[in-house]
Image (cartoon, rainbow, N blue to C red; front, side, top):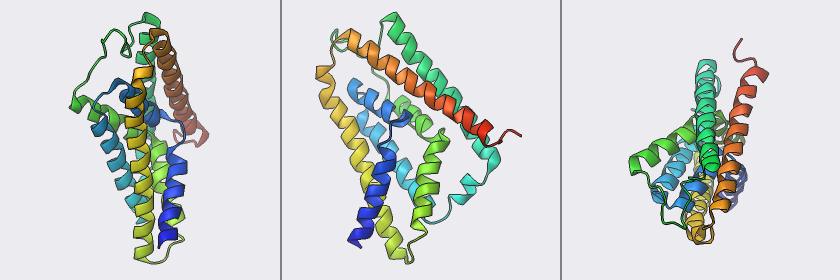
Length: 212
């Protein structure tokens, strides 16, 4: 049982740790000290739900629904392009929300934080590929219900460990990021990450002929 939990933990952590829109968003909000508990909790709960769906086979409905995949991909790419544009514009104008040195950190409401986190998480088809398809596929090798439950325990433990560590770790490190020039660089890097992921989503549509 312990080995199954460990297997779930390592598989999940290896997928979650990859640089992506969600991690960049959590990192940014952690540095801004913006409702980080709620943001990390939403990420964790989404992972818990999707991983459970994948392990128990419900995720096939998502992965096999072409219309839903197209909608999610287009909506996700548009959202990421816009989010990247906002970060890039802030960097060019020099009015980054990261201006901690002047005590001018922009705060957002809990509801806005939750909404943005849900959009970043659920409008990206890759999250379904990782949590539902890949983790669900690996769990197919498990025979008993107890083994599957143990596997899920490992996957969600990895999710909780990663997101809360990333969010609160960034929050602790925010005191070292007080120079406006540093924040401009971070804003630009985040913008590039968002745009590259948005572009990859559009390429995913054409590469898999989902629009034909």
